[in-house]
Length: 101
Length: 171
Image 1 (cartoon, chains in turn blue, green):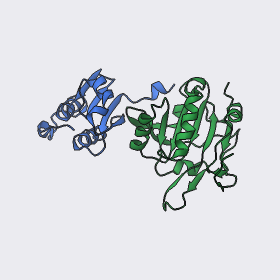
Image 2 (spheres, each protein chain N blue to C red):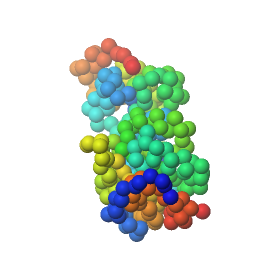
Image 3 (cartoon, rainbow over the protein chains, first blue to last red):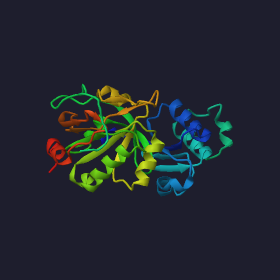
């Protein structure tokens, strides 16, 4: 029953991580439904992220709608803009400077 | 019986069997991450019963005694679903699960508002501003209807676990 209620996007994030907040802002801006999974600051505590994305950095976004799993905030921002954004968004060029925690 | 003095809390004004357990949304903490879940979604995940277990905050011996006992009695295998809730942060709950190699998951409710909505909150003497749940157990069906309940009346207070298991309908 609740399987159908699960939002299509799962967002692995760290509390207070600016790169994660940037992705959160974009998900909100595009009105996308997502669930947040918070992991801990120590990379050694992030086996779940390693399993789903092959890396221990966050943010990571898993989008069931498109089958895409993506790490690194700049890549995620690009992906969200090209998939869910309006064409030729004026701030699209600003997505270049990325980072991760 | 315990050899230390206990404080009488008196009966709590908690929801009774036959009533619907109050709904809430809190981060559900596993040994890997935490994410918001609602109680109704959790209890509706499959057939059968969910046992909702309130304890004092992680780090207290009371929480450890209760959860060690439940693990020893294999509640994780004998009940359809068991879930804890306590007045700890997600970080504190996660550490507790790891330190105890716990087979259970917990909702984190550091503000203790859920316990308040169940009428089982307890202000701690000498820890001003901190409130935590009494030890309490509620067996819920998939619609959150309470099928059995046990709530501590003393502080600290542990159930007779054999009697508790029959109250909650655990085989």
